[in-house]
Amino acid sequence: MFDLLRRIVPDEIYYLAAYHHSAENIPLQGDLDLFTRSFQVHVHSLVNFLEGMRLFARDARLFYAASSHVFGNAASEPQDELTPFNPKCIYGITKTAGVHACRFYRNQHRLFVSSGILYNHESRYRKPIFVTRKIINGAVGIKNGRQDKLVLGNLSAEVDWGYAPDYVEAFQKVLHADVPDDFVVATGRKHSVQNFVEAVFGYLDLDWKLYVHEDKTIIAKGDVSLVGDPGKLMRVTGWKPSVDFSEMIRLLILQEAIGVDG
Image 1 (cartoon, rainbow, N blue to C red):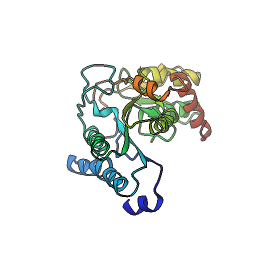
Image 2: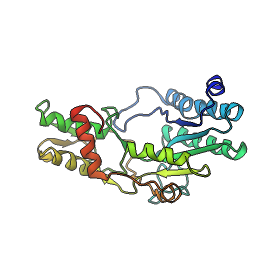
Image 3: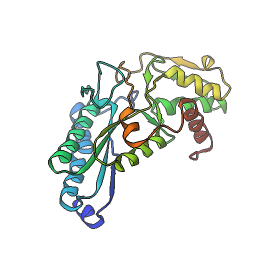
Image 4: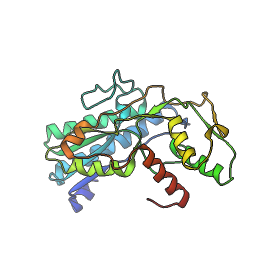
């Protein structure tokens, strides 16, 4: 990384790497391996970039993609930049450490380093194990006659879902702000898994109740629902989502059906 930064001297760096598992994907490795891999990606490699900036690219600006998992079991909602960190999973713990590393280099070395505390952001590039892709793939498969049912976990679970292209625009706006800081990137609205199912199947003119089966034994990360307050991001950068929940789902279905980005 030092050699890369010394040769390129970039203007902007987007650190989006993550070692992550779907809520329905039980990791096969133990906690030690998961901690090790997560720390390598969320902290160690990040610090390589931060130190490289300090030595060779002090005018560069870095954006670090953190996660709403830093809040864990938040005591209140919505969560904003003043909400205490309280991570409960390995992903959240190591992402929290990454935010603190960014703050250290920002405050100690006066580098332009900003963190985005990202809530769920969806695109067709999600792996099929994630619930949004699972729902859309399943519904399209049912519509096309490739399958006859879809099994999901807790339909009442609530999520603050946004559209990934909107969030990428937020990353850029954060790095173009006058000063570096931490920002919640969210829609400020949450919807249940059932809401998502209803919207997807409704768009495809299917009665979801005929095909969707709820299996609450499917393991999820937890029952806590998180919803972010993007007010600071909007005030400082002028950012706002370009699409709402329904339009996001329409775009995701079209992208899935034709295999290209909308």
